[in-house]
Length: 218
Image (cartoon, rainbow, N blue to C red; front, side, top):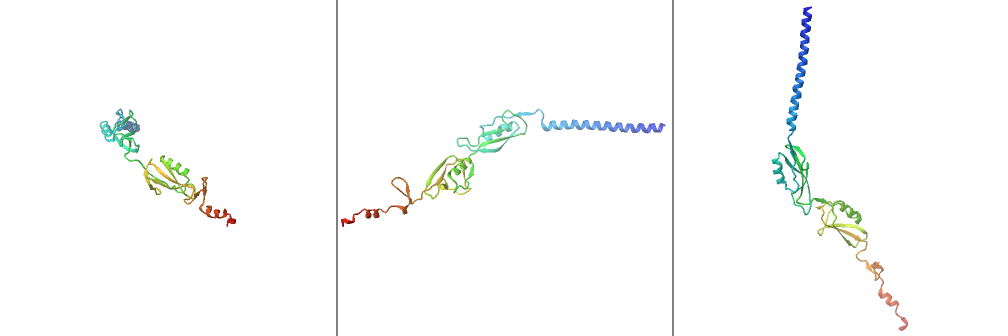
């Protein structure tokens, strides 16, 4: 009987010890995890993001470095009257709170305008070509009509007096000239009332004068 009680006591103590070890281990793991997360996220160490708009990238980097941050240029836009290299936008915005080491993403004014490829426009109607160019940012367009068999069709696109080829890249917003057919061939002759008259139908004045002569005079 004593043997059974002794064995039961030993067995019970072993179970109790295991339970205690498991509980203690779990508590230690939880505490260590919380300490790690606190150190990793730098809990309570927030930095207020400064305003960077209008600064040059170099100036902004000095300011950010002093605060434990750093800047990254992720985009650029072109504006004719803007200062090249100046910051126009930032993410996160000023006065937001971030952790130390956080990157501040910057958008700056570029020194050169974006280059855009001109699509194939020959044989498009002038209305279609104008709409397509406007959608690409080309709003300064000139129209030059030249004699052609078909009226209103685009014959070419010029930039600074030079004919452009398909997919050739030029600065965004540049002034372009559309060469458009007028529907009148170069050898068309105009009547006195302004209407067009093909050369083959031109009246033969000499023949009319002969018909007007009174042969009885002779």
